[in-house]
Image 1: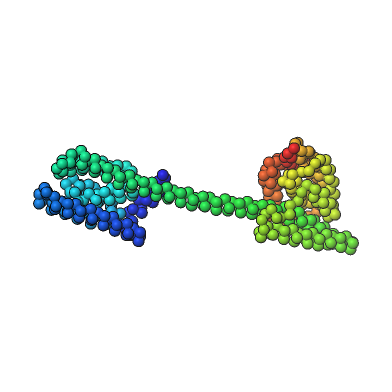
Image 2: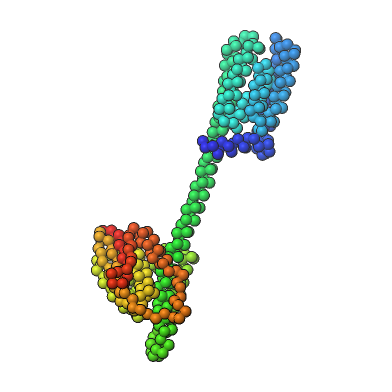
Length: 396
């Protein structure tokens, strides 16, 4: 049994305040000890060889004090038991109260303490059979009767103690299991929040980068023909509308399970590239994959391409971007996106607007690829461009 259960039992036993059930139990044990003492007194009065008057008087007084002391058995079980054991060396009427005291010690105190009190009670029993032998009953038989009664009381008390400890241990284990389940639920919620944050960055970052490109074009070309201005405004309007739609889908996760969010697949990469082309980017796609791609792998590959195109629009506007997909079941899926070196572009007099999320996209993308058991690499190319490459598992 664990230490916390033992401490709880000791604390309950030491509590002075009794519950209604405790009052009933204490009253019944007190009455049982009193009835036993009265029966002993009646038997001695009717005996043909009553004990000396002083011894009988001491016996009755010890029995009365012992029975009254049972009301203190909960706050001071060991002290009361030691007093009753001492009285039992000469008193017969205190035997019932002593058995109750030993039962209390066995229930509310550690087994080591119970064993010490039990040994002292055996010594007291030996003293009793020597001081007050019973005519016609061998001393050893009288001692064995006392031993059997005391052993039964201690055994029953230990049984009650261990049973209570078991119940407390099971209750404590259930509470810990409930706490652990709550912690797991909170961790699952945190993972869901992290997933929502990644989705919001990937989805909205792509759309907003398109808006930034065309808004910048309008800013630096105020004298552009009306047709170009109208075309750029149309792209801005369409992507703003689509960004709102994507935001509604992502926020919908807060009201529904994460699995209900529409998830892209590898087949949607073609639409992603086409959308970037309509926005003015020069993007070429080379798809050399064969066979159906698992959902997690395809979704992660889509996010890799989406992040790469977003970064190309931000940091290398006007360059040509090459998207290459290759792989097959058993060998894995390789996603590689490269862009040429960016040409020098004019910047506003106030300087570029800082991006508070700069650098976070690649960090989140690395986490996403790692969760899919893949590898991610990125860096500058020899001609001054940039590449982003990911390998993702594709089971056979």
